[in-house]
Amino acid sequence: MDTRTDDFYPTRLETPMAPIDRLDPVIHSRGENRTNGPLSEAELARYERDGFLVFNQFLDHETVRRFQEDLAAYENDDRILRAEGTITEPGKQEIRSVFGIHRLSQRFDRLTRDPRILDMVKQILGSDAYIHQSRINFKPAFHGKGFDWHSDFETWHAEDGMPRMRAVSFSITLTDNNPFNGPLMLIPGSHKTFIPCVGRTPEDNYRSSLKKQDLGVPSEQDIKEMANKHGIKAPTGPAGSLIIFECNTLHASNANLSPWPRSNLFFVYNSTENQLTEPFCGNKQRPDFLGNRSNTSALTPVQNDGWRQSG
Ligand code: 6CS
Ligand code: FE
Image (tube, rainbow, N blue to C red; front, side):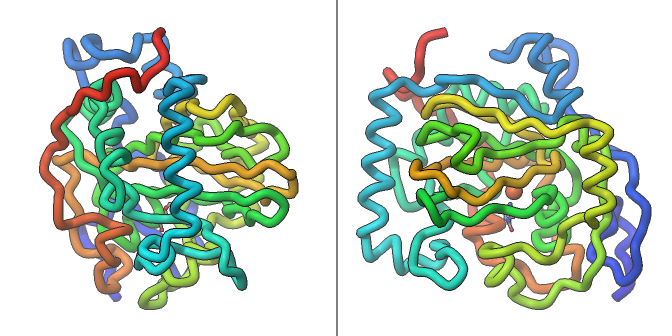
């Protein structure tokens, strides 16, 4: 297949290609839109430099407890277990991820539209936004598997036709994340480089990639160079913490051999000015629960009283 002329981030190639510099801003808002928002200039500068930000205890204990109850109920809920977006661990019946969670639960849907979250999203993306993808990743105690190194943008570009780097993930921890239960690892500064990956994408790749990703993973050499240059960070903290990370930040997580489960919630916001096109890998579009195309108008805020820790 010929490379499209509007493809600024070529990937899934037959032969290796050198990493390329990011072409898009990291913070898309300017002037007053940049300064008038919940994120301070110091936080914005850190996000620009590292490609992520961490706020411990973003949600209050009571809210976290209610979400945890919802998660526990999902594990025995036939509607969830049979849902298209529910992915089980390789070779097991244990839940690994539930995609499209904001469509399954009103509580999660309201959280995606929390005014403070939306104000931060606007400050980062410089426009209105909609949910490109939402999910819960469960990592059960003792046998939860890990996630290989990748940039989410690489997949969303190749497999969903997301044209530019103008999306951001908000991850809220619903259990404590500690050094032993497979917390998210990130390479600070990696968001400034796009690493083209080798390998043609088979149709319906997601059926295997969501259990274990083989395509769209940078070479070990590329990861090593990035990590030697920038180091690796694995933020830990209590349940209810928030990690905001840029769509091109390289990340991974280890298996959970600890006796403590780890569950994190992810909402991916895409700019309304960065609507999906046809997938750049040339395949058919992925289902809506992975790359939402059916509801892409600007999210409107809803007040969630008592949802947040003060400060
Ligand atoms: O295919 C996707 O969209 C998903 N895959 C990975 C490994 N991370 C981002 C996203 O949830
Ligand atoms: Fe990811």
